[in-house]
Amino acid sequence: MVPRQSPTQLCAECPELLSNVRVRLYRNRTDQAVTILAVAQPKDTAALLTDEIVQQKESSLLADTETDSEGRFSFELGENENYHGEAFEVDVYCATVPHQKIGSNPPPPRQFTITTLQPLWRESDAGFLWVWDYCLSARFWCAIRALFGTQVICGQVTLCGTQEPVPNATVTALDADWLTDDPLGSAVTDGAGKFRIDYTHRPFLVTIFPQLTPFFPNVSGPDVHFRIQLGAVTLLDEPKSRGRQPDRNDVGPCFCVDLCVEPGQIVPTPEQTPHWIRVESFNVHASASDLPHNILPLGYAGLPDNSFTFGGAVALWGNCPLTNISAPANSLKFRFLYAEWGWPGGGDGTAGVIPTVPPPAPPSPLEPSADWKVVPAGSGSQPVGYVYYNDGVNPFASAPVYITSANQDVNGWITLNGLVVAVPMANGSTNNVAISETNFLRFGLLMYMDSVTISNAHASRRPVWATNKVQAGRSLTAAEQEPIRRYSMIYQVRDSATNMDVYIDSLGSLVLDNSDPVILLNLEELLANACNPLAGSNTLHLRYTVDHPHLQYFSVDITNNSGVVHPSSPLDPMPNENFVPTDNYLFRGDASGPNPVSNPGGFPVNITSDPMCAYAVTLKWHTRRLYTGEGSTPVYYCK
Image (cartoon, rainbow, N blue to C red; front, side):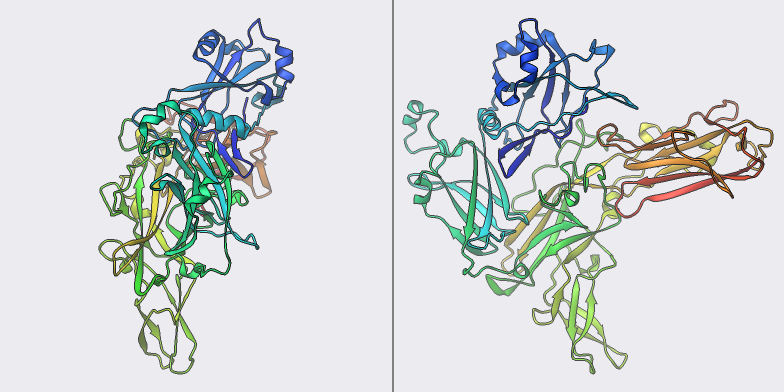
């Protein structure tokens, strides 16, 4: 059973993935009307379970697994589980819920049942398969979230009348209290103007009359009003009375709202607004309308089938205005910080395991620390913009402006305003031009991240035998395999004069990988003598080793001058494997077997009918590193 993503809804425009919860399958009990339950709509069968009912069902447990960060899960059911295709009941056990803020006294876990399913199994190459997708209703899921004391506000900010989205605006939700407004939380709108604010129920339960709380324990939700800011400009500041109106008074655990700001206001243009929009071509803030260019929760890029990683010089796209719109005489500066995810129990990483321990919270005020380090700037092919000047002949001459580590100060800051650039003159000399608002045209690139320097903080685990063809077929030990490296990043913009932050944005997860694959290919028949002819042989034995933490695929074929003789196909199976997110998300390759000449093995290929000729055995591979990572290696023989 391979279900896809298991989403829920907070409202029609705000889905939520059920990540890191347990899915439990139960055999149906004798007192249940299985047929009626199996054909019933899940909305009619979904129900919260008491601890007593959960305990009664314990002996009927068929299987239990945990969803990943994207809400996906799978089960393998068969003889070991004494399963024969019958219907089963699907429950979900939540120790926490997504985006929950854990306090000192967390609420108890909860379990609810969804429905009874009778799978329609289909035969496949891997056995029998069935795929199930389901989305919990907003009403049911929000009631479950409320039991954990967690609330959420989802919304969109647009221009009134035109409905044009307002990106990069900071939305603050406040509870209209008697004396002071209690801030519930803030969020930055994405490219579609959408935002999400998660908060707990505790802040708005605080009152100046705490002695009354025991008499009204369950009647109070926040009375919500909003403030919207873009940079230093306030676009909307709703009065406290707005929170007393019927559509905002005592809002529930899931509240969805549309907000608009007047187009006639002095709204900073994107050119005047700091923002961080992309890593290479992938969205820093996920967009529901651009799924192929989102960064997944685990830090991989693209659709799950792609799950790209980043390496080398990584382009960071966005904007840092030259000056502060609220204080035009003050230059702005920017930098990026990063911190690494870890593994339960610590250590430098376990091969084949995704790091799940997030980095510590960044310091406040935000400065580099032992955990949060400055992202080094690298050298890339594209400029961050062009400076225009008079070269003595052309009054509109332009020169590209590149940013490297040389432009970072000791604290990692980059300041473009006033940056002196050497430009060529018409007479062959050079001149210095200082960047200003009047002569600089941005390209949209902030800088290139030098991911190699970040990766090099860890010693390579590449084995010493990785280039020795005699070792082909050997498997890497866990200590020789490169682990997955996962990072969090922060984009920080600060006023150079006041040294106060004017903009901060973050990306929770990004996977960097600069490791090279271990690729070895040989023939057992050539181990002792690389020029040994295979005349008279009916079988050759392939020796191969392929290992990389983010392998996309590998394949082996045999060709001669007439074309492919032994392809990687079901009719003439040759070694080949592919990355499949639902089955082998941590796929990293394979090895054919032992390598000593005295211990024959490897992958046998029948060459009885192959004519006398010269042949090439080619091992091809491709990693999931964006733009690069493809290669092949050959071995030749004669028959």
